[in-house]
Amino acid sequence: MTRIYVVRHGETQWNREEVFRGTKDIPLNDTGKKQAEMVGLYFSHIPVNRIISSPLSRALQTALAIGKTTNIAVDTMEEFTDMNFGIWEGLALREVEERFPLDFSLWKLSPDKIRIESGETLAIVRDRISAGLANISYDREDTVVIVTHRVICKILILYALGLGNDHFWDMKYDPGSISLLEYDNEMYTLIFNNDTCHLDDHFYLDF
Image (cartoon, rainbow, N blue to C red; front, top):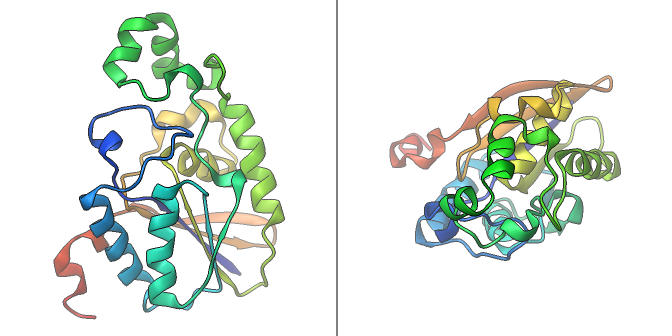
C-alpha cells in the first residue's frame, strides 16, 4: 500500500485578496510562510520517500519546508502546476464577475463546462494530473507527498475517487491543508481530507 499525501500550498497575498492566480508565480506571504513551516513540522515524524511539487514558487516554498524537516529532496513536475486561468489571471474575483458575468456564472454553476479564453478546461487539467500520477515511480510501501494548488487538489482527489469534474465545488482545500490517499491494488482510498489541525500551535505540544 502506497500513501500519497496531497498538500495545498500556504497562503499568498492573492489568496487573501481573492485574485485569480493560475500560472502567475506568486510567492507565499508571511502567513503562508508560517503555514509552510508548520506543514514541514507535521511531516517531521513521518517517513517520507519522495516529495513532488508544482514548479510555481508558492508550492515549491511549501514543499521545501517539508524537505527541510524530512531531509528529502524536492522534485518538480509540471503536471501538478496550477490551472491556467487565461485572461482571468491577475484579476480579482469581483472584477471577473463584473467583466465576464456569463462565464463567471458558468464557472460557479458548471465549472466542468467552461473554457476560459487562453486558459485550460478542467478536463485538460484532469488529463495532466492523471499523466502525472502515472509517471510517479514508487514502491508498494512508499510515502509520497504532492504539494500543489487548490484546483489541482480538487481534481486529483475527484480523479482518485472516480468522481466527475461536475463535483468540483463539493471539495474544499484550505491553504496549508493536508489530505491522504492510500493506493493499493490499483485503487485509491481517501483516508482524510483538507486537514488543517497542524496549523494550530497547540497541535505540536505533544511532539
